[in-house]
Amino acid sequence: MDDAGASLAAQMSAMGRGAREAAAVLRLGDAATRTRALTAMAAAIRADAADILAANARDVAAAKASGMASAMVDRLLLDEARVEAMAKGVETVAAIRDPLGAELDRWDRPNGLDIARIRTPIGVIGIIYESRPNVTADAAALCLRAGNAVILRGGSECLASNLAIHAAVAKGLSAAGLPETCVQIVRTADRAAVGLMLTGLEGAIDLLIPRGGKGLVARVREEARGVAVLGHLEGLVHVFLHASADLEKATAIAVNAKLRRVSVCGAAETLLVDSADAQRLLPPVAQALRDAGCELRGDARARALVPGMADATEEDWRTEYLAPILSVAVVDGVDGAAAHIAKYGSAHTDAIVAEDGAAAERFAALVDSAIVLINASTQFADGGEFGFGAEIGIATDRLHARGPVGAEQLTTYKYVVRGTGQTRP
Image (cartoon, rainbow, N blue to C red; front, side):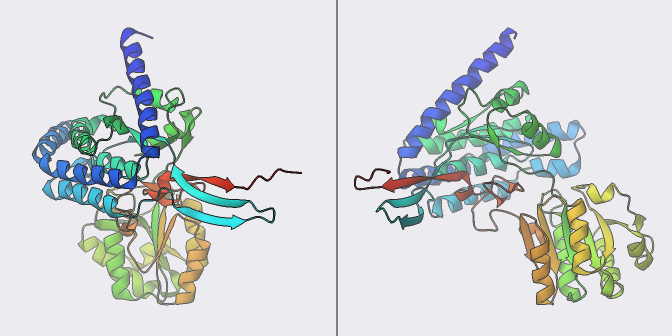
């Protein structure tokens, strides 16, 4: 290891030790102190808005100069409204019920033991993310609400933005009397820092959360050593129009699910239409999508109903476009839709539009995704929309947490067993 590598390793090791010490402070701290810190963080974000926007402008200019795709630039971009949304998100997290110390269950055993399951912090969380600078504020707020220390490593494309937001976060921590090491950020774009985090920083990190593209998440899952990983792959999101769907609802939901923001992981990438009434549903919905600027790529049955639609390839069904492009397939009923989603989906978010309640409930039972919506846009796949204030991401794993990861999902639990002198025979 050269001198630069040794220096970075020493810096990261020190961050790990600082985070572990901060986690001990947070574990024994009270909810009111964490709430004060969150409120002060929100105020500091507002007060530092000009600095945050100036830093973001530098990041955006560099991204455009590098030829970054417009959808990715949109993820990176901050404006006054988005900065205010960050501050409001932190305030919402401050206002939600503190999860720590909650008694999840309690029971007595015949031998007189009193057993309680109590919600506790995880400890130290490492979050590796790309593109979206608002994740800096969201992650800091949610980890703090849950009593965890956190080490943040954002993408090089938004380093200036992240550092400016983190400066506001640090002011909030100081205002509440908490150590600034409760929320630390890697201040270099050197990718070696990610590799060091994947080792767990000598046991300091309890949980790694990757948030970004498929390549990042796959790398973290494959290379993490001695530390648990919570994350999701791409959002291969489907909207299914059942034969009973109301056309007005179907059109509004399909257009919103795809086009409200094409760069979010809850954006629809495939439209499935029930063959039993595709003639009624698909042509007008397709026209509305086209009128809104969406390119359509369909299977043979879809193309037969919508002249001029491009041919969808096998790769299209597996592609997260993050662009105004939508794959379209005609399927046979709920079972056909569920089979298509099982084959091509990523267990992220899928929706059905149906007036037939039994069909909708069957879809919800058959589709094993983290989020299943009935008669609502997939763009609601968001922790803020779930009332969590913010989210770290949408977890598609089946262990620990699933769906939007908010403060409660960043906790674990322990058992407290109270006795009166019992010994085991």
